[in-house]
Image (cartoon, rainbow, N blue to C red; front, side, top):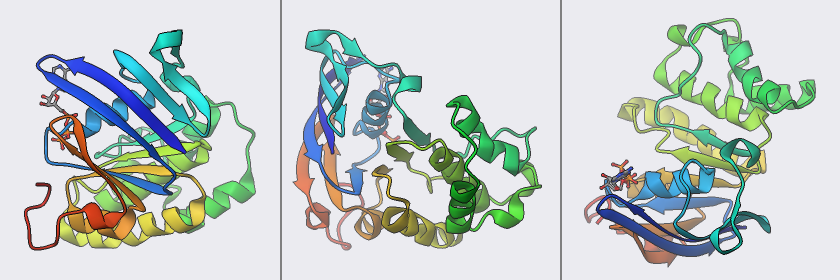
Length: 228
Ligand SMILES: Nc1ncnc2c1ncn2[C@@H]1O[C@H](COP(=O)(O)OP(=O)(O)OP(=O)(O)O)[C@@H](O)[C@H]1O
C-alpha cells in the first residue's frame, strides 16, 4: 500500500496531494505541469515535502511532524525515467548488475534469468546502450531497476520518448511486469489510453491537486482531450 498525504511549495506552484492506493499499478494521470514528476520525486525521496507523510507497505519514509525523512538511496524504490539513463561505457550485463551491486545484494542467477526472460533482453547482454533501440534501452532500464529488488517501482513516462511503433512494442512488457513481477508500481502518464491499459488505480492530478481517485473509470473517455 502506498500512502501519500503531502504538501510542497515549488516556486509559484504548490502541490497538495492525499491518497492511499492498494493498486498493483497506481497511475498518476494529468496534463503537463499538473505536478506528476514533482510528486514522484517526493515519493522517491529526491524532494522533501514541506508537510505530511509518505509510507510504503506500512513503513514511514517521510513524516514531517516527527522529522522522519528516509534518504532516497535507503528507500528501496526503483525509478525509471523517460530516457533510459543507462551507462554508455558499460555493456548491458554490467548495466543490469549495477543496481544490485549498489544495494549490496547477493548475486541471484535465478532472479537475473527471470527478469531478462520477462523483458526479453537476454540476447542483448554483450552490447552497449548505443547499440540498442530506444525500446530495448527502456526494457534494460526496467530490468536494472527490478534487479535492485525495489519494494516500489516509479515509472515516469517510460514511453515518453518513444514513437508510436515503439510504444506498441513496449506496452506488453509493462503489462507483463504488472502481472508477473510482483512489485507495485507508480506509473506516470498524460495518455489516457496507456493508463487504461496499465493502471489498476488512478490518481488524477490537476494543478497540483488530486481531482479524482479510483479505478480506470475516472479517466476521460477516449473521445475527450488527453489529460483534461
Ligand atoms: N523546483 C521548482 N521550482 C519552481 N517550480 C517548479 C519546480 N519544479 C517544478 N516546478 C513547477 O511545478 C509544476 C509541475 O511540474 P511537474 O514537472 O511536476 O509537472 P508534470 O505533471 O510532471 O509535467 P510534465 O508532464 O510536463 O512532466 C510546473 O509548473 C513546474 O514549472
